[in-house]
Length: 388
Image 1: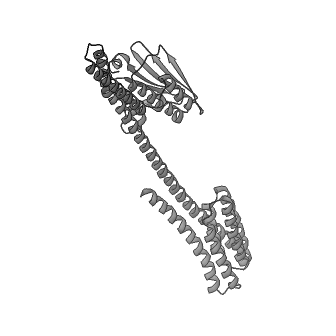
Image 2: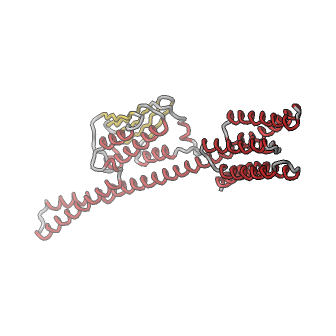
Image 3: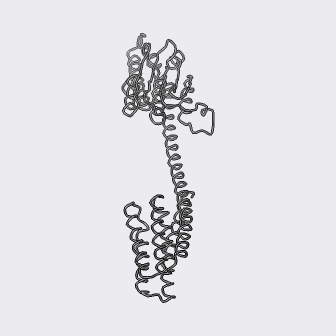
């Protein structure tokens, strides 16, 4: 409703301007008829041409087309003046059009030219320098002031329209980000739940059945135990495939380091050089932790490429004795890190990263200043191993 109102206001302003110009042209014809001026028929024909040209060209937006349109209107006005019509009214309308439809400097130059022509016409008609100069200058000044008023109103309504459109785009992008983040979070939650419940249960059943196979069982019972173990093994394989399908696509069929490499390679295709650095002895991580590390790297690197204006960024994966660390450091212009504590700030992506880390009992930190921004996440390995 707001953007429609702004658009309608802008349209009404332009319509009012064009109606005013046409009314001024009709006044010239009316004066010619009432005063029985010579060549009234020709003046009527030129007025009709002026009206048609004005209506046809008013919708033109290309610079050359608008220049040709205004030039045609000036030619018709000059013809009216040569026939002895009181064309000052039309010249006032032309001043308004030049002031609203042309860049300021060319518009002012056109106004000066129109004013000079009006002075010359006034001198020829009244044979009076004073009246011609004062009348023409006064009309030009009033026309410029009114034209500038229209110009400011047009600019303001266009600026508001642009702001409203930008707001709508931002809201749409934010809604899409929230939807995508919600989907990813739900997929990862399901993957964790399946890993911690179904997959762990099937793995335990399989181990118990392995132990049962080693017992001295009757052949019929042993066959059933083997069949049950194979069924549990098949179910475990299905659960793992489901976990892999719900996890980030970069992790599908590859290691965590390979997945992070792909994240860096995609981001490094632009203007920012993004590199991966791996420190320490790699260890097997639970799928929820690996998935979280990939998602965190994707989000942090995306922020660097899109918002930081950085030339270089380094993603560091560090395997410690009891913790695994992920650091994303860039040399961009930074930001005010205190916005993380402002509920009204639009920092959905950063809050989503922090929530993902806290859900896995990890630690999260961020520091930023011009030339250096670092996002860090740490997950405990001992605690995670208990949930594998």
